[in-house]
Image 1: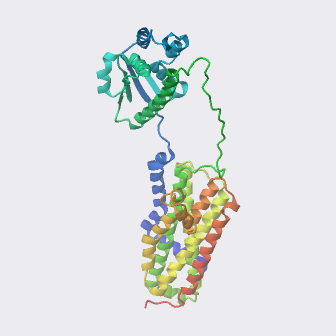
Image 2 (image 1 turned 45 degrees about the vertical axis):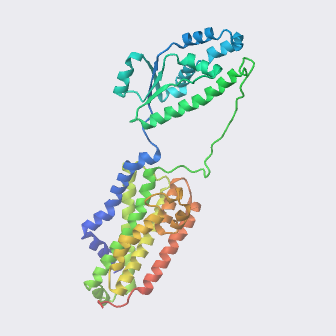
Image 3 (image 1 turned 120 degrees about the vertical axis):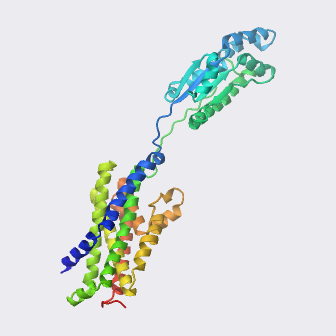
Length: 418
């Protein structure tokens, strides 16, 4: 008779295909949408950066330097051979080009030297992310400002407003280069930068280690489990509503007339809910494995957590059914599905990871059944064992025991509608 009651509960739900499809397929659709829509954004899986820089030189650096040295023959520093050689080694544009053409930079920066006659066309086409124009007389004016303290010349930098990321990167590179070059130039102007002077180098070695030695969890994995633990809760509301419908239609009365104890009926509600919950999660996991390439490396532990969560959902369904029967109304089931599940999902971390910006709320959320199950799944996925998830399993056990006990105490022993 007990098995017959379980079959009856499952058949009742089977006769409502719309609700069944929502319960079984909605989490799959939502997981797929979230994974593909925001997965790359949250994981930083962006396309490789390819910055195109055009260099337009209106001068010849060597000629400008020669003209500056010719005009500075009477200066004391100009008679120093080392100082003259230092200037030749510190040509600003040449050093900037060497920086941009380094092997590390070439991985994401492409530098092209363009004729000045093409300048106007470059601005209109927008092919390059940054155009760097060196005006005529820049090198000579730069050295003059350095030693004679005259007006400092400026480079003309044109940024493509449609390429904000590339523009920001180049700006940072130019600012860093300007700082480093200004330091070197100041040392040279003070006569401190000679062949005998060696700038100190910081030899720094470092080792990067993960604090908890666990593998990071991808967005697809996180939302697969977070949506799973949220949608499984809706089964409790659906089953309890169906159970109350049986009382309203006096089916429960006929069960009592068949000399079946009410507690047996309530146990059938629990078991049928556990079966449906386990089927729902199993479908989600299979689809996640096939579509999202999510591996379940410790499948027995995943199944253990799923079983415990399904038992909790069964106990919640029993509690809702008991309250519905006691007060002759399915209002609590409706409130549970429309309000309480959303609150539990928020605190349990189904919508977003609370631990990143609200650790206290995340700690509170781990005491909810869906939050404890989510943390168990994530811990297992990161390589954790039974010992690491035992505290969460105890939370699930406690919730199941409390809800089941209250349900048995509240469930009426008589039929009929008041």
